[in-house]
Image (cartoon, rainbow, N blue to C red):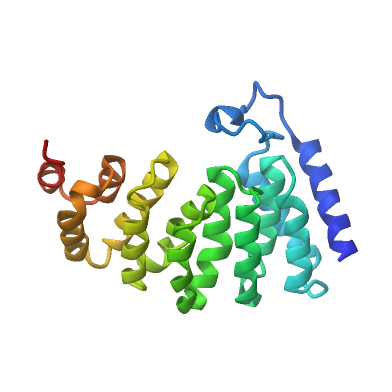
Length: 247
């Protein structure tokens, strides 16, 4: 795996060379609470182009194991763009993902290598979500993630289910995860749950409405507002009123 590590180090140097002054693009304003996060100020389209270039250069010579080593080297880096580069390169190998990789990715989250919403959501959208789509039974692990002490693991429990529930798969798991997280006071968790519920409503809006009416008083208002975004305005107003906690 040394060759993959050398490639990762070279990729980091390329990102540094591509970096722009903070005045041109200061990403820090989007991550005010992430004090330990650093930035090269490289835009995401550039990161993706570099990832595709690296994946293409090693097509046929790397297995998913080398891609994992590459990503693991970079996800530990304090720079956001380095983390995202590792994730994007690994995502190019999604057809070779295995069930065991889910444990590794949970480890990255619980070790705070993804201690911000952008890295966590990139992992969910590019790595964990596609694996769950190919192995839907793995979604049954998400309720345990929702009970985890680490907030990024908890956020991933909801966000990772988005690709599944928007297709109507594993809706029961999605609603279980939602119930487990309704008591969470973290704003980023409440928004993630609302996002996941909104997507679950795309294929069965009646089930979503029934869920909200049943559990509404115990659902944070932030979550509720995200969940009802696709309802017609009159229905949104009625649900906001009907689910309000009684004094």
